[in-house]
Amino acid sequence: MKKELNTIYKQWPHVAAVFVFIFYIINRVWMYAHHGAAGFGYDTGIYRHIIRGYFERLGDASLPSFGFSSFSNALQFFGTHTDDVLFLWYILFGIALCITFYVVVKLYTKNNIIALIALILFATSIAQFEFFWWFYYRNLIGLFFVLLSFVFLYYRSYLLVLSLFIIGTIHPLSLIPLGITLSIVCVYDKEKRRYLFVSGGVSLLSIFAFNFQEIVSYISLAMQKTLYVSDASKQSGAELTGQFISLDFYIRSSFLYIFFAFAGLVLYGKKYREWSIFLIINTILFALGILFYRRFLIFFDVSALFFASIFLYYFLQDAKQSRLLRVVATLFFALMFFQSMWHMTHKQPLVWPHEILYIESVDSMVPTDAYLLTINSHYAPWVQGFTYKDIIAPGMFEHDRWSFEEWQEFWHGEDMEMRFGLLQYYDKDIFIFLGDRDMWFLDTLREDTRFIRIKDYLWKVSL
Amino acid sequence: MEGFFVGLVIIFLVGSITLILFERRFLHVSFLERTILIFGTGIMVVSALFAIVF
Image 1 (tube, helix red, strand yellow):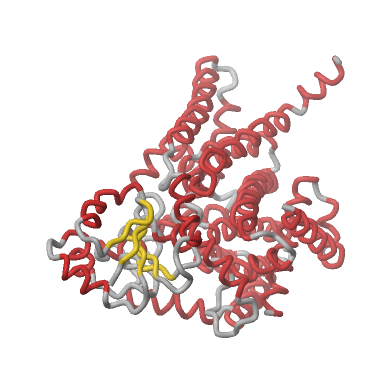
Image 2: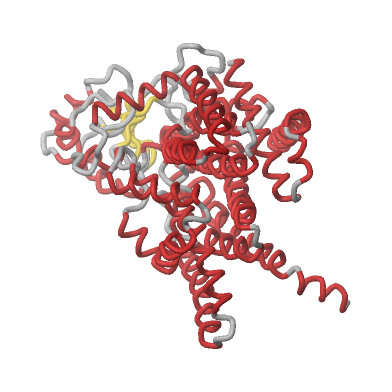
């Protein structure tokens, strides 16, 4: 027994890492365990629609190119159910992301305790929790392969070609900060120059060969909407920013470690040049307000955690003799865990599980060739993802034919004939879905007998 | 649920074979590093093959 305890004591960073890892898994699975399909963010329904739709039309050359579908189609081809691709594999990638970050920090710093500190910061980071909760599936895979690319870079493995190719096809945006970083490293680091030139060149050519359509669509979007979105209109602004959290939310949630990150960059940046460049590039991309700029906060946060853990390690080493600083350090880590747990347990889902059940029940009550209209774009992704119907939603998808003013007339207009006139734009039967947030519209529907109640949340339009 | 495990096994199998063929040195790193490398490589190779074929 004494021998075992001695071994555990000697291996304490690894033992502690296991407990932190368990905390991380609970933290990431919490919302899904409590709310099921409603436990994640806005993109859940959109990805369900994509994963299902692309596999149903596997081999259809008319489908727009979408790199992510190679991943999801492969898994479904092996017999994985759509919802397992959607949730189980997403959670698995989240777990792999944490392990990969731990591995990368350990690899670059060659220090178990720095890796442990990095693991604690990553597991308790609210920014990383929010990133996982928002369900940016492709971005998550992209971040995983960005970290894996750092592993390949460390070993100068030509598997870097493959990781860059995968990032460039599954989530091209993730390639921007990494690509710029590797280009700069290629310029100043003579030893890695040939290796990076070959890896980068081959992967770039492959990306353009296989994902040309998607790359062109991003470029044309950037040209149409202008590269800088800081002054975009309110309507399109949210989408063009990349959504995700705002800068002030990020600062409020990361204030405990962000100063350590900058201190770490200043003091140890030269020793870890690739990571310094990566952090600076992401800072610039975010500050410039480049298209989808909020997503660069995710990469910024990862590199900030890297430097914060290094600074904290050396700071704690130097402060070993000070009892006060040991107490402060303990309080710091306790606060990180407390903050994370508080945020996790107080997080509210965007929709409720019973609303998902309502949506799922729609297919059995609505004919195949009918439209399903949701008056609220909030529910649109879930309605699209969890039914097989053509969806009409305000400003979303391909079936919406109304302008914003016409939607306003439909929502709040006093003229019922005007309302029915708008509905007659469509050439098929229409059923209206109402979520909990839309119950105010019941009064409007009850005013006219041409709106036929099937359930409180489902109404048929009789034109 | 069986499909999930089948997919996972195939990913790890493809990843292992790829590393054995092209990066044998990765089979001698630490357990955690090796796991991530096999997993990541498996995903990359399977996705890339699917992109090429379909």
